Image 1 (cartoon, rainbow, N blue to C red):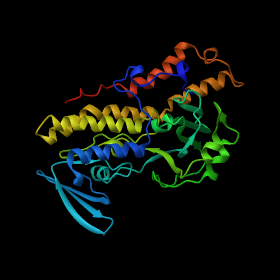
Image 2: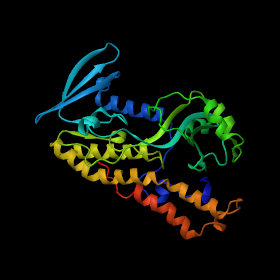
Image 3: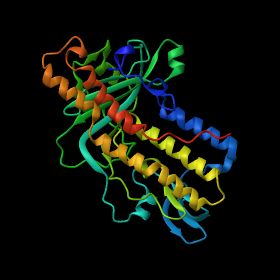
Length: 336
């Protein structure tokens, strides 16, 4: 549980180049969509288009897309293709046709949002439990709710299950509260009743925790990947979204700095690929669970102060080793 001075600082206070924000992903999508339309025009984003095939020659990239609404197929030519099409990327499959499917680690996740009274100081993130059985993450994500004296809380329930195979890892599968509630019966943390919070949510989502093995390259010539298409990772430390944003920013900076798009894509990949791949592998280690396992071994009956269980050196090493990995590369200097 991160609370006041008892938890590790984040963002600028932790020495990172950027502040840390918690925001509803729908609100972030709307902000980005407005910015794109303001800068590139109302027709810059076309909805309901599904990429089905990619063709490339020395002069161009051709994308074959299907208009889902009218079931029509059309071809679109471009100087470059940036595959930002997520875990099941068609562009990634074009570049790496023999790659196996996503890797599941045996953890099933449910997530949702619910409004409640603020817990603790109203700006706290809770991480409770362990991925060896069940873990719960919760944090506020709305300044508007905060201004009304309330909290819109994003929560994630992570449960290790014993199924042999994961269900299809779609991000928008609707979950059922009756499936997740039994794992958190009696959980009450910092005045927050976990079962009540889950029950107060609207639609919840369910999906397996998956990633993919790091790639030797994200593209050649006029094609590259970004975000989950390039480096899908376990959702540890909010790095899935954060690394996608940093990658997109680095890519935009490289494209803006030259008239040679092929060279820009190559420089972007050089700047970002090894760093993002390192985070994919580091997330598999479940760094926060290492702390929980060690504390459980040393204090099976509980404790009053973490300092009575872990030495300052041990705590610092575990928390900072992952931080070093996730912030190892400084982002490019902003351009006007």
